[in-house]
Length: 225
Image 1 (tube, rainbow, N blue to C red):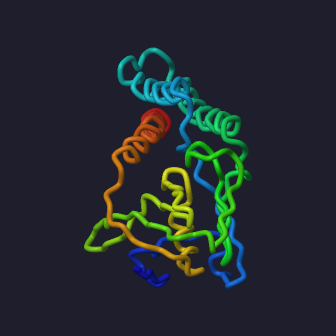
Image 2: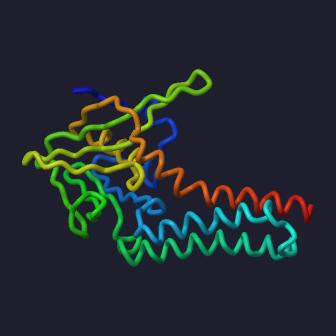
Image 3: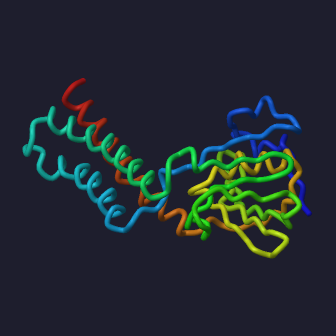
């Protein structure tokens, strides 16, 4: 069984979380789940994709449609409104932020249940003795002659042979892996490329807002600087 070291910079060089510097064998750490990429019903997904993207493109198609001040205000309002509305929809479907927390100590692991991991809603407590292994799916990434390891998924296998998959889209994978290593949970490594679904979804969610932020910056620079 492979062993990871907390001093291994390619794995944990940029990993940080609240309480990291105060870790002890008795620590009980809570990690908030990433919620921005949580899936919504398809009509809402399309609304959050088309709305910001259309507004980002429109100034280039018909810049005379509105005054620059109105374009800028509308763009900023759309960015903030999209983020706030998405948070409200996610809260209504998945519950509030405090319910989506991973918690880990030396004896047990708690993860938030939902249809994202094909379980009912609510906290799932896994005792250490009930764990068979945790498979870490990763892929190396080299930039400027430096290699880092990107973790896409943790697959928790119980003694009952039931498996629970935690994807990096929805869970704080790197901090969680750091703590699993710290508390010496049984870990295996599997070198595997990121799923195209993960990459596509990240682009699908991020691109419209990133494009609108970029256009908003250009509008501000063009007309107000």
